[in-house]
Image 1: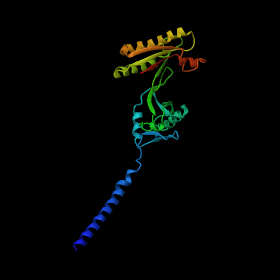
Image 2 (image 1 turned 120 degrees about the vertical axis):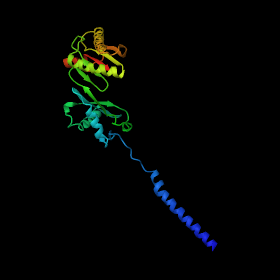
Image 3 (image 1 turned 180 degrees about the vertical axis):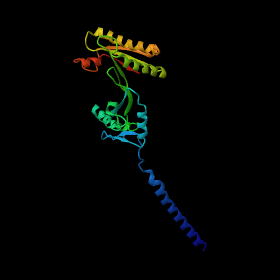
Image 4 (image 1 turned 30 degrees about the vertical axis):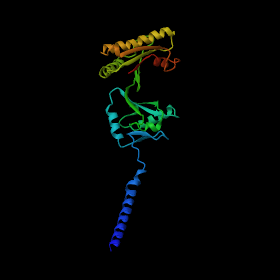
Length: 254
């Protein structure tokens, strides 16, 4: 009798072990090979296309971007492009992101640009898929990009074209520099008229003109560096009056 009881106890033990093993396989081992869905930020891109993909967090991010709108500024959207692509791919992405803002904004409120990054898959780890947003000044006298600003000058002088726009921009720039403690690089440029030595001197005069304006606004002189490229680095053709005007500039980099 005792042997039978021991045998039945052993069988019951084996049965419990069998049930425990099957429970372990179904509830624990089954999930170790499960692919965990990658979570992205508010905005990213499918690397096989230029379509923006938004998450539930996009509505809040969009609201934050719109809340920073300021009078006289436009929303600059910089679309990324990656290895094997060209600038047009970045601009197409920027155009499709622009469509997400139409309604609260119009086409006239938005400027587009493109910037190159290397790996699209790596860019997905960025909250916005390397898309950049910035409210910028854009008028005939001051053109602000995501990483630099151009102030345009009148022909053959170190005088800005329009003091109203320039003064307003420099007021804001000086306040930003004083509050952040950042340094600023000012580089003067000219059109192609005249010889190289003359234009190098004129470019320096233009850079120093902006430097003096910032110092008057309380920016420390040791936070400002100046340089001149003369006519050596045009950003537009020197074959038209419009192109020459874009080349007569001071480039500002914080």
